[in-house]
Length: 156
Image (tube, rainbow, N blue to C red; front, side, top):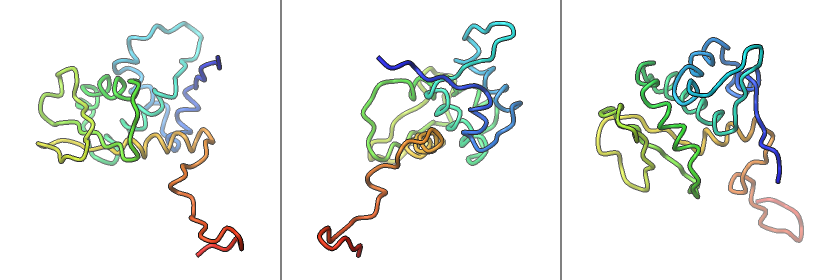
């Protein structure tokens, strides 16, 4: 069984385009990260699910304008969503309703329907792709150019 890869704060900052360590430290004080035991003189370690969660929080805060107090209220729900086993479709849009952010499950997968109220929509497939790209994984098949004539090797 392969070992679980963990990442340092430096790795997280690099994966998210050079965010500041102070911003990462602020996110690390949010649930569920604040509940993890830490050791003195030992760096925090993060998982791939943590990286994807931080990428989603960055999009919510920096791109979609979510206030920090709201980020604090949804961080655990975003992490639970990212950590849950599921077969994700190619498009993985999640909806975070503006109302009832304090309720435990504030993240919903949009399956072809439109959001029913005010809130934020995050394309989690883009967040996963961003982290996968940083980790050096290949791009998905759907993004490769189609070769129409294999015999001659020419693209159209």
